[in-house]
Image 1 (cartoon, rainbow, N blue to C red):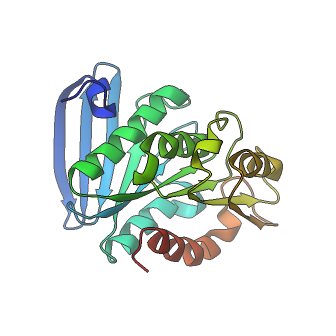
Image 2 (cartoon, rainbow, N blue to C red):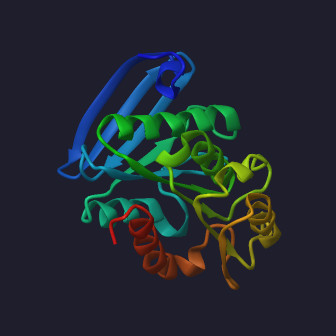
Length: 222
C-alpha cells in the first residue's frame, strides 16, 4: 500500500469487515493511532458514493435524528454507496481529514469514480478539506451546521457543487459560520431553516426531502 495515500498513512495493523445486514457492512480498521470505523451502505462496487462525517464528538448517526442512516438506506436503493465515518481522534482536524480521506480511497478502490463529501458541525470543515484534497473525484460537498474554522482551504472547491445547510436558531454555531465558508469558497447554495437548532432536529423531514435528490444529481444518478 502506498504510504502517501490516506490508507497508507494510517499504519493499518488489522481489518475486520463483517456484513451486518444484506445492505450494510461494518468495517473496523485497527491502526497505530486508534480505531477507525466505517459503516458501508449499499453496493460494494458502486461507482458513486457519499462520505458522511460526524462532528467534534464523532458519531455515526449524523444530525436530524439519524440522517446518515436514512441516507445510507435511501441512496443504496439508487445504487449509491454511503460510507459513514467514525474518527480515530474526534476534534483533531488533520486526523479526521485523513480518516474521511481513507474512506474515500476505499470507495474509489472498489470502483467509485464520483464522491459527495458531507459533514456536520466540525465535520463540515472535514468535508471541505477532504473534497479539496480529492480534487475532481469529489464534485460535491454538503455542510450541515458547519464551523468556519478549518475551512480556509475552501477556495480549492470553488469549481464544485457546494450545499450549506444551517439552522436559524443554532445555539452553538451561528448562521454566519456557513456564510463565511460560502464567501471563502466563492460558490455554494446556503439553505437556512429559521426554527432549527444545531442538530437540525426541527428540519429533519425537510432534509430527507432535499438531500437524496441533491446528492443523486451531483453524482449523475438523478
